[in-house]
Length: 190
Image 1 (cartoon, rainbow, N blue to C red):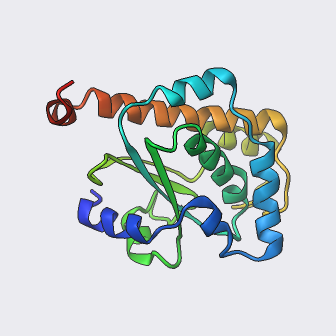
Image 2 (image 1 turned 90 degrees about the vertical axis):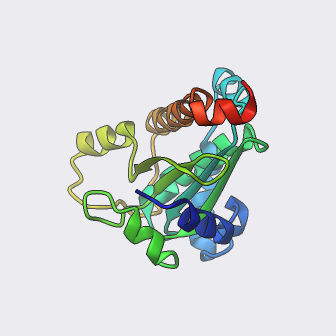
């Protein structure tokens, strides 16, 4: 289980999306920008995210070199933009946050992107990585065989929208988990 003090320390060191992008090369930044520009929440998704009342903190372990990060981190940034007061999403380079990466392994691998969801007090809630179900389905359908696509590879609109919806559902799941948490309901009197 991920310790809240470890998560708090790494959350404090992690970067907002735009600052994280500055750590990459111009070509890497351009790939992330293209994916961000292509990502659009539906009105229903925006309304849902805007309705969230619990603060959700997220550390996204990522790599500017990673094709899956290019395809998915901009989606997480779009979601956070829809409710910046409640969705505090920070990005951390997997290799610079080695201790956290080791603790957040998935199937004995330091996967990226990996989103670590926390409550307002940095209590661990959920870990999702390295791909959403829609992303895995699309890759399996293409039968690429490679462990990670090239960062400059495009993502179809359908795949991007499906992945965005997967991520929105994960955020909704965490919101509901936090809203129904007896600990937090007692703390907030709701």
